Length: 187
Image (cartoon, rainbow, N blue to C red):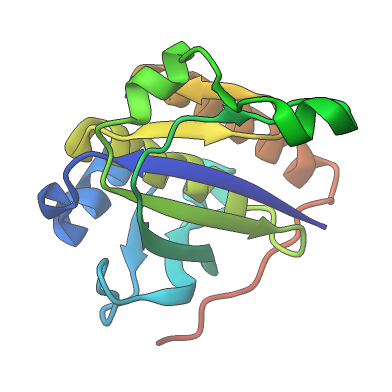
């Protein structure tokens, strides 16, 4: 099973790996993004080293290898077109633009988007995808879309509320022995 997220970005030139790591560390998640990551050319799995002390004191000093699939793609807004219904209407009818939604208005100035995919084999993937997206919202004026819930976030503070709920869930999973992770052994 996997989960997809999207982050529509207005200015990708504002992205900085160092600032991203600092931002996520300020959320209480000490991370290190793979040293060869390049935001504009990377395709596929983004390895991230995550220190485990935020889950439990007993994990202090232990690091995990986690991450998520991420791809940066060019984006150009196009309005949604309603197709005419019925055979005769399809032949003789005209297509009509759908009215714009608040989401359409928010993403129409975006010129790139990140496609983010998280698997179920690692308990930390969704957490870091949300933390990465919160940074994108703050630094790159991104709009975050979670198609599973239908939610759109344009403010990092809204994503941080979700991050805190995910951290609480990870702590419960650890206490129950249900945490799925991979030990970090090096790049």
